Length: 142
Image 1 (spheres, one colour):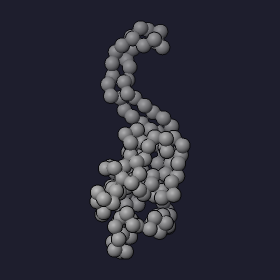
Image 2 (spheres, helix red, strand yellow):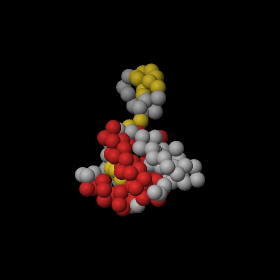
Image 3 (spheres, rainbow, N blue to C red):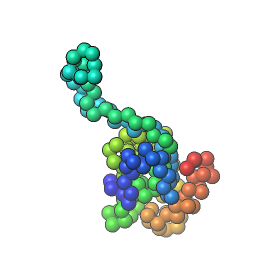
Image 4 (cartoon, rainbow, N blue to C red):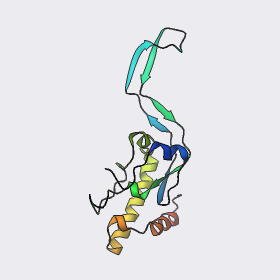
């Protein structure tokens, strides 16, 4: 899904907290190996070693996940919230994919859906400040 906002690596590394943050993530950007190969590596004394192709692990400070990344653009769908397959680059998703972050996003989506239903509006028209207040009242740190 491509939402109104695509969460990207730079935002995680900078610890951005957008105005519509509904959850915090903090796990390293963690991209698993694509392939393990046995080859010569000049940085090792021995000529051959196992090389993990594609591995990436970068520490990040706590960062905000914006509400705009949890729903599609209005012209694509009006009542869909997506806490797991959110709008994020592959590298950013390497951090967001952790269960605690996904649980926080699910919590936010549940409150947003309830607010949209109560007010009779689409999820794109949810009052984000009201949503953030409801999440904080229930102990969510944003």
